[in-house]
Image (cartoon, rainbow, N blue to C red; front, side):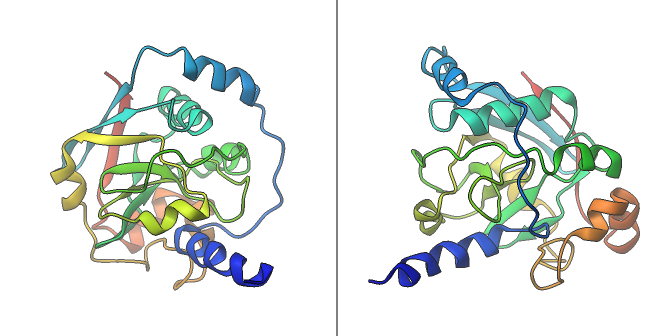
Length: 219
């Protein structure tokens, strides 16, 4: 197989989960990758995060041993309140639920290019597991998705789950999916620039039925 032939599945899958226009990475200000991995190796178990939504609550068990850098970033965003009042802007039946653009554009702008390095894929993209969405390698920032079905084809393209839904998966399944890709998928509509620049003002006006992430916090 040629190099081009091997690369094609990667880019096809990353485009499926991509949202924002491609931008050049900037260095992450996070703690060094080696230090984060060391903390994960000595951890005492999963960290549970309760996510309250307009449909009810679900709980994610964050497992740093699966993807320490992704787990660290997700918990940092949860602890800072970044996800509070976000919209589940991309819900595709039999695929994924995606969120991670803040309701306030000023907050989104602070984080959207703060990339973290990639984790190796340890856990598979099976139903209920959560991972970061990205366009190119090394561009994980804030957007995450939950697998609604087994999407194991994503494993070989670098999408590394860092946790899983341990209760309330029925709530995830019930999140409004009527807009499909149109409300923020990024490809069929074009991009996510309006969400980035206008936040919830845009989404609530154009896609009022989207479900809301009210707040997320450690249990």
